Image (cartoon, rainbow, N blue to C red; front, side):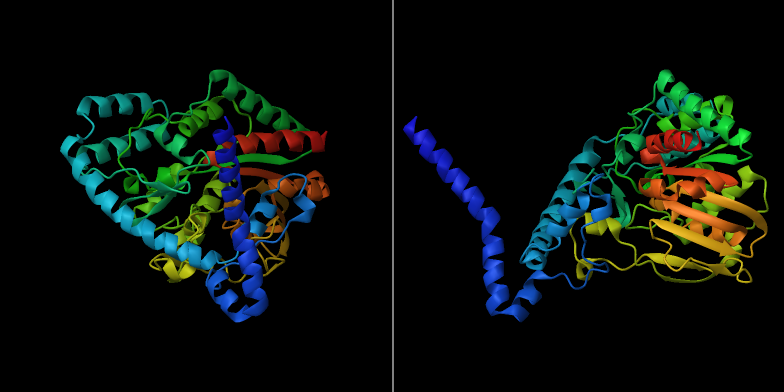
Length: 427
């Protein structure tokens, strides 16, 4: 018993030493050799500002405190570089071994299973298309590619990166199907808000942006698809029948565009500027207003400069592969917009001489960012807000003519949480 207590104390002291020593050594190094400390600690090549504490939103989330501390750990850059070098070597060995073993046992999906997926998917048009794509991919792709993840990121075929966490993988394999009761509850919430909006002369649109893995599934590793008729396809079909408000899920539009252009970033989970314009077009179709061919506005390409998933893995910029492209889209250059200096701000107010003389309020997540510049040119008065900050724009919501509630597929439930909050505001 006495030995056990001594051993536990030793472990505790060692653990505390590991936690404290970087800060103590870092403080001494910074005090007596400031330039050397900066060289080995500060990731100067990351294309982002160091995280600051978000005091205004501190009661809702402590994520900014965690990011603030992580960004300032002494010797961070050196630790990241050493760790990345070791992980790369291990991953190369693992991939060779896993693919060699997997290829021995992997068999493409049988024709019967693909047919069953097709029959089930035929419940909706979008399900037919998605099921057909998966069936064709299974029929022609006999190459096994092992599932590899690091820090909630999937390292996929041809170097593509996808989210593993945040519900993305569950959406992809189809193991998070909603119950009938859950779908009915969502439809009821939307219909409550729709009735409120109608009474106040407002238009309402619910918008779900497709996950990157659904659009670029061909790059995903070899994994078992639990249900080929997936969560969002089922919810989309349900909403077409039971929702009073338009329910938009532009998977078909993005997949069709992806046959000709890249519409999502290779190393980021979001759609790019062109993908955002195709997404805006799907909204315009539901609104019954003028649409244009998005590709017609392309004027060139540039470095994408979007590497969110590398950042998730803690990889500094000088270790990033810069081979992703971004389309330069010059949309309606004749329209003048004021207020779009920082499209990524949590709250953006714009005014323009666009064609639609309506006040639009879009409440959503980060997928809204690459749609906002186009909507701002087509509506004379816009408010774009992240759903975490909607309490600060209550007057804009109340006075709007058009309300769009957006969420990415992996966070679709957040759209309905937002619906409830807008109901409370309008009541």
